[in-house]
Length: 258
Image (spheres, rainbow, N blue to C red):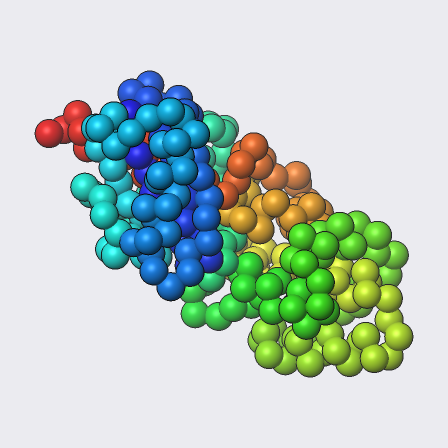
């Protein structure tokens, strides 16, 4: 068995695969402030669910924001791991959009899954899951509700601010003016979709594009992004573990190279 661990800023993901690259089990836990602890917790859960123990693991690879802080035999970059994971599950994809808790990425790959170009936003919360977390807190609702309410919007408002702090003030102003909350939420997600679309346009969209990361679980945001791009994204069954999957696939390769 082989392990991939993605130590993300918001969540830590561990996945176990066999020598053929088949998914055995996975676990997702909050990262908190201790990546070593969260990675151990995620791996223990994945092992337990698969009825395995650490002795069954031949090689492990860490990736993500906290990869240097956790116990693994090797490390690999997020860009490489996301590309490898997407190519495994969605081989027709040539453009990848990954939106996580603290950053967003756009990646172009070739028919073999090799990275041709990429661009990354890791300096600003706007265009990331953190933006949605802040807005959910401002609106005093679980983040999962944002996507559901977006789908009920009839007249989305325009959110002009690209800064999370100013956008928060804009949201409060719209609510105080009596604008329906679903229209405000739709405006928020449309604004993020536009920001990500503009970023991705710098490397170009291929006909088939994949959408990964935790934000890909938001139906409202998927709809907003689809409208902006003019195409429906390919989304893995569990979009949050794709980077970890790529790390596990790298573990197979690294073990064979020993």
